[in-house]
Amino acid sequence: MSRRSAARTRNEPRWARVAAVSEVPAGGLRAVSTDRGAIVLANVDGDIYALEDRCSHQDYPLSAGELEDDELECSFHGARFDVCSGRALQLPAITPVRTFQVDVRDGDVYLRLD
Ligand code: FES
Image (spheres, rainbow, N blue to C red):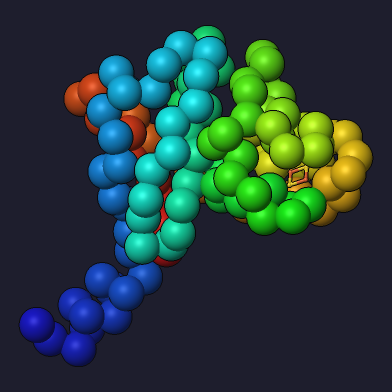
């Protein structure tokens, strides 16, 4: 591989398949493991969103929580997050959780992990 093509490769987005769409229940959550750590997928009316699977309050897994419309409630102390933006909506969490770009192709869920 030439230096030029290696540089292009470094700058390209890195997508990884993490699940089949059918594995993310409608109105529900699914935890997946990636080399960027644990991520929780949320299915909101057929649209898939991805957030770091770690509550910004005390690091418990958000995948143990409940999805209500486009809000994910942490099951440990009740913080709520906007699944689209990761923004904290309710105490005790005050900082957002990281979100990831999602692409759905041929029935599979891909996340941008660069
Ligand atoms: S760990 Fe999520 S609200 Fe406390």
